[in-house]
Length: 466
Ligand SMILES: *Cc1c(COP(=O)(O)O)cnc(C)c1O
Image (cartoon, rainbow, N blue to C red):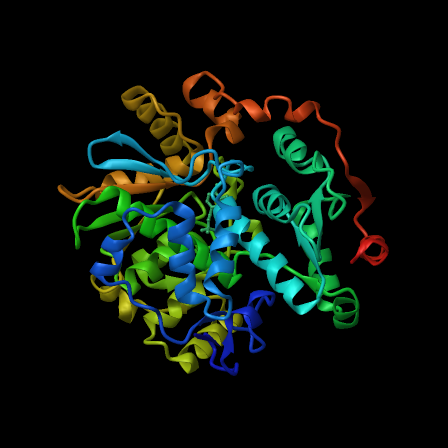
């Protein structure tokens, strides 16, 4: 299997050659030249597999330059019970509506599902090539901690994660800064998230510095993350159905369009998915696209800080991969649309609107802070289950798209313990913190605090890079 770019300007490459790269050289995103097919017999033969076994089968469809036994060893390590005490359980809320529990990993959010595999495959490929890699990133919370927990202690890779000093929750700080592994470097900058991000861009954009220190990234456009996310759609379908061909709908709290893109690919591969229900918060750029056909990202100044903060995005970095399919995989048309986006700040695909639902199964909705609170309250009253604000966005929108006889699975993208403030506002009580994290905030913390100055960060990376 070879990979190509959505913009058509990359010679096809095998999986291991695109794994460590971010954007394709032409500025596009990588995708398989042809999607593997999932037929009914194959799916039925997978019903008895463990999550790690299923992951090795599904990922093996996309990764043919790693021997199958090695892949299985990696998925067994990534999805071991000491990493995920429970792995992607179905949590029924009411007949026909369940959560797919993707947040049982070390950082209590769904990004662990893909990132734990990424940690394994990065270490494997770097060792095979005798290379090292220094991951430089900026985080306001979730992505940074998922990356650190996935890469801690891994050989050949170090992580330099910039975060805004004093601007993350006490829980998030404790989660990241309590890591004592020598290859994890937390750098808290006296500034805001955007300034951290600007410094990452400046250093990664300095090509001499970048190649001298072998800088890399683990952002949401990484293909291995998308591929690892396809696994849990297959897993969820197998758990929610009993017979070949039965339909399931999935509702997905969305920001960068990474999670739901994996659902789109699973559906195109032949997994019997009825609807892909895209849920946004007040930052409804994607909901607006599915309603109008116009994609109009917003400037940071019009991106609201909401109570589902991991969905507070203005530009959906994985969206181009879906657009590629929408325009019939015409790379020239994708290039033209991206040019138009750069020139005018938007593009218009309203002529294709009939296909959004008919061909691709997408429907969309948005929710407000009040909707989240009401949904958290109602789900708790009805089923006794506590959900986090992001999952509440998913449940809220899913409710408008329930259809008799078709199970709806809402992807649980975080556990409520991470967002106790909103939970207290909704139901007047704080959610329980998992046992092994109760002492988290008492653990010693390891963080380098600096002024917001790219030279200071460059100097630190220069002295500590592998
Ligand atoms: C990252 C994140 C999302 C959004 O996922 P995308 O793949 O960016 O669409 C939703 N909820 C939580 C809790 C997240 O951390």
